[in-house]
Image (cartoon, rainbow, N blue to C red; front, top):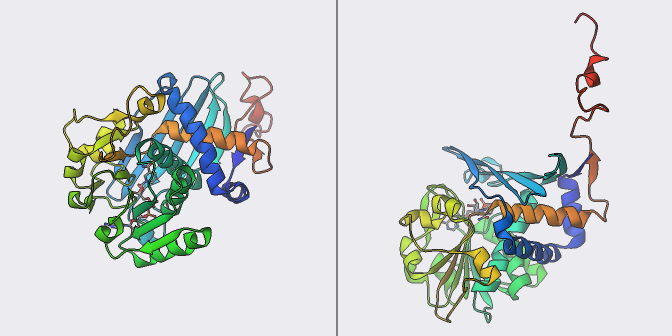
Length: 343
Ligand code: NAD
């Protein structure tokens, strides 16, 4: 049997456990998996592009457990009543290839993206950071804010979105949780005085939601919305001034902000910072930039955390996903006896 976490159980688990507890726990799992980065099978995700968006498959394995995520990215979806990003994912046993967990991952992706951003910022942002600017107040935004409070204690947010209703929703969701929120009048207004800038917009374009003149020394930029060929958020001049940190270079060079740069543009792989073989922030004035696109190992960590966390709860059900005849060679026997004679 395969364990199944549907939307109802994902919501029950997330609300019972609490998003900050989950993000904190996931950071631990992410750190463990980034530390053993070299032991994973890694491949850039497989992407099917259309004019409206992309559908991607993200596989990885540590030779004991295999994981994949199915995820879409359709920036025009909200205007048509759909979400920009939805996902589901699977864990399987490598020894026999049987799936062990099937899970909703729209919510889980938002939690894992927040946990990854927060883990990275804990390495790269100035430790005395108190204020984060957020450009983009859509589905990911609240999760990002909770991640940064969990890992860095950030409680002051300055938010800007071209959609006033999205900013109001952001305030409505987060103000009761104790955040101090300023609704900005522009991207420039949002980033004024911020120690960290998160860009989480969605537009299928080489957009410039953050220009170089707005980036001051010492800031950490957490850029999560530029994650597809032809879809970026930052003015290229920012990349020239910043130290750029990435997940998996073969994927990020195609999908991330650095698609705007030469193929040999220097970047640091994050796992090396986590392991300690490469430095993170080296000076107070350094501009650090996480060029996030989302990598399969992060989904592996999130699914592994979910599997372990729900194991002691009732937030899953067992489903009969794999046809399993008593005699493993007699698959036809499962239907043969039932087939009408002569039909
Ligand atoms: P969403 O559509 O729910 O929200 C995006 C928001 O950006 C909207 O409110 C929109 O009004 C706003 N926006 C668009 N252009 C803007 C601009 N120029 N200035 C200010 N605001 C602007 O999308 P979401 O689910 O929150 O995802 C945000 C982005 O993050 C998407 O591009 C998505 O692909 C990406 N993403 C990345 C990762 C990762 O691991 N790096 C994971 C999940 C999502």
